[in-house]
Image (cartoon, rainbow, N blue to C red; front, top):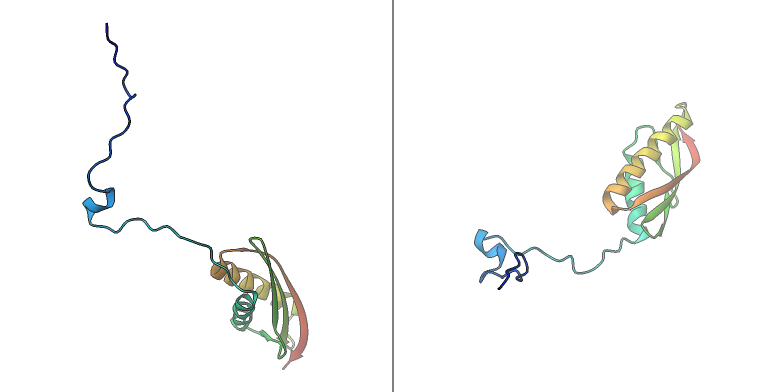
Length: 121
């Protein structure tokens, strides 16, 4: 007596690859890694500071960034318009920089340290 086991045969490949039937291109392999230099993160952070009302980057080196693993740490030197509350502006800057840097780099921002370098009228 012969028994037949269902599901024991290897799956057969079709003559054409699956993407050929639909006319679409084959799925792409990322083929490597992407490295974002700290200087790029610094430029993104400075631009994000410029987008916040009543704040701006300091004249000398407005941002420094450090990358480790998938995380980013940003140190900012900003100017704040007087007499706007410094704490409120700093929180808006922190949120904007975090949002922009995470969006551009795809990494997580661990810290955004802010130094108020100057008050301007």
